Image (tube, rainbow, N blue to C red; front, side, top):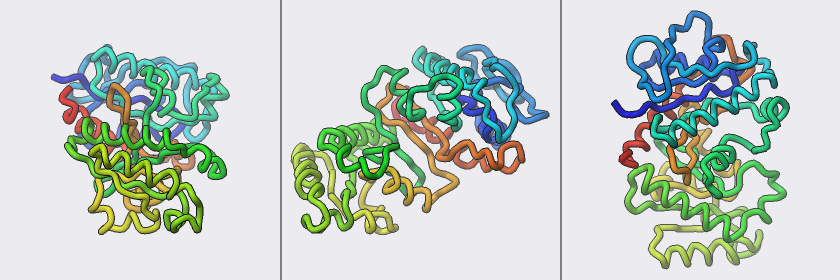
Length: 317
């Protein structure tokens, strides 16, 4: 049997443990890494060893002891070191071939900073650090759309300066390589959104699109990449437009995330491209407001687990 997908627990006070149990009940198979005391009451689980496959029956758990219990909806910084240790353990195992992919449940960055001195903006940057990779790309994917924000968690006022030619080129190249390696698309089509309204409208609404983005795309196209743009972002995401590309590279966070969360709020998947291993995550947060109530929707986690397996198969590992 092939190595299992490793599912990290995420913040134990959020919906991560609950949706993991629901995903298992829905037929998904993985190894959950975390403290079994944080699972919903009555959960049937069995302890497994590093590298052991999931098997059948009770949910497979790779036990990681935490400082204490978890109260739904109330993040506890004391548990932050455990959350970080789980992520580190998952990466070590997958790098050793004892896991096929890493799927991460949502974390709370503030709780990690307060309780463990977490110095990273989020999962993506931390995973890149653990993997020793200098540059990775965040993709959000659902059956109808794949989007990549070139800049991520920065104020909108900082985007024009941050969106350099080098950054955008790296983003496009990593996206292209990821579509080939992880999604099995031999000749990916990438559409690039403009930074400004109407993609600058010839400079009337900003010069970045004409002076930086368009020449870059022309150079990449001359190399053979199927890259087009810059396109006005307000016309890129209707059903007809989406048929013309395999992924859209956007200038900033909301430009990319608003359309995909509108199209498939419950089923979107966060994918990290550029890592030496497969990593996916549900495209939602810890949802403290509903944690512990038994009403959390596992659809995005189920989609993330399935996409992880598909990506592993595409890589042929």
